[in-house]
Length: 550
Image (cartoon, rainbow, N blue to C red; front, side, top):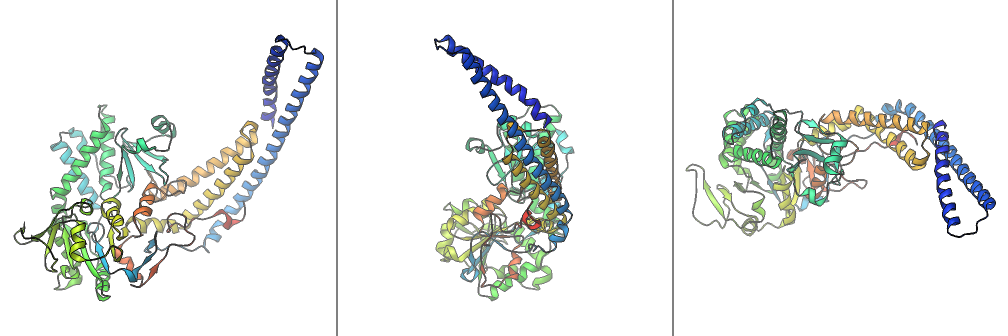
């Protein structure tokens, strides 16, 4: 209140200047103004305004006091949160989460990508890709030898980031295209909010700015994100001039070379125990589908020898003497997705023993043959499979799922990190921090909506600072449970869905962590969107109402 009182004389001085100027102009312009009446009118007006100012401060203090009391009550309720959390349901880490209603009894055909869909890889694979791409940058693209010193850091990247080819920043965006305040990095340095505003003018990414952003959405992007950041940081530390777009182009070229040249494929097959994870459950899932009369196909961008070597290693303990190819009606390698969905490339029959392509026209698919290339148009003409009866499983939202979604197929996104993130969200420590965050957020909203900025007093400023500190601590706690650099894959620090979540919502009818999670559901099950879902159905948001009105 003392602060508010100190504001009154200043306000009166400003009002005095305003009234004196107005009176002088009126009198000088020929208005026969009686000086005594003018003085009385002025005194009355100023007095009335000062009285309103005083009442406003009193009202503001009363509101601040009420919110302060609610904050103190909330602190007491924080002690009760752990007990309340025990009664809350937990989300299933292996569940299937539904964006669009799906009747499994209407699905007759199941299609699968290979990498990170049927094949499960260990974290060591990202180290392998990173090191191979780094060596290509130095040996082939003549980057400085000092770049070889960097190491892959699995604690830094997450999936779903964007790279700004103009400014060189890695960005985490929310569902509405705004930059996460603590999710903007230039090299390995996190930019402050002030630096973000100086670079972008606003946190919201407009249409023109979005044109220079590239999404890093698949599971192979982890090594790519880390390598981009490390190269940028090297140039910054070495005080070398560089163009951010060249860094992206070169790193992208290096990553593609590692895949297209077969370097990473040969590296994996040379030591499958290090890079591949054996998984008999997905074989049980495929067999269950076959037993229920479903048709299966495999469509991947990887070459056949790599897929064959990986499948035989992963299933050698489960298949016995059978061939994994017997599970699928059609096996397509080097499909060149996403162009597969829009091009008119013909299919070619591949001879695995001779390692060459046949020249005869492919007008039907034989179960004992392997096919390369092709396109969606020819695929549908040959199989006669209708769009809505086909579901395709893949991990890459753009290459795997966007094309099938537009073609009328049903889509299932395989998001491996989903299982880990749901387990964290189920932990009491996370829910405790989330509950605190929502309670504080609600109090801050009340504080801002009931107290005018012009009437801020010491009590207001003190309470505002305390609430902001509490909110920041809760946000930091939640963030660090996932990833200290960028937080959760699906959520921003404020609890909003991320841009990655937006793309899942847009292109995936359902999503889960592994295809074999479908074994927990009957083949004729109806999968419905939850009635109370806001955006992403696997998010259970802890509401402040659970702990009493704050």
